[in-house]
Image (cartoon, rainbow, N blue to C red; front, side, top):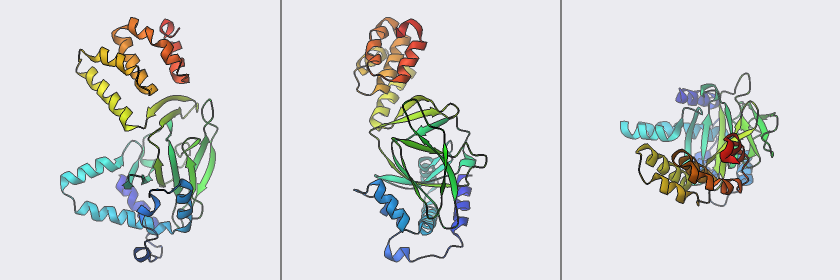
Length: 285
């Protein structure tokens, strides 16, 4: 289904006149994701480049690559590049970011909106335009959305620290959203309710934090007798998500020990943690 979406995207550029991008290199995908390039520089490059050729080369390059892979290699590649939940395909990636196509009509209904740290440049190709909803991040959640149009002449830059975009709220979602993503793994992904626009949780973008969380979950799954001791040690981890995960383990295994860490959690001044503690009754007081 998602690669049928790529065919739809390819149809958008099929009739466009090809430029000499192969000889001059101005539209090579790697040019948009290079060391030292600020997001504003990438935006200027997109504005100065015929993105029709970039899209054509991305899709054709993926087809050529897939034809050269064995069955097992192809499965591994697809698992790494396709996100069925989000309805997206990563067609190019390097250490600095990725170029992604999203197909909102193929994604599952979103109950949450995600503010991903870093920057995203939405772009389009000649003759194709689409709309997204822009939300500004404030102290209590998200602002009411404002509709923005993206076309071949109007790419849009989103700063994940201060804003996010979505397409799910529209009656007729765009066929395809084309994005250059420049992530910042040092910050967290904030999660908002799509209906109320309030912030309700966060996810760690740092792979190091994720390893701690996965390791703790694995110990719980096998009922490792050292899980409680490890959870106590993880309460000193600098990341609040790790602290919170460890606290939940202690609360389940030894509430008297967990209670000792409530002041530490409250000192983080995290609205989500504080609200959860208060809903928990005595343990949060």
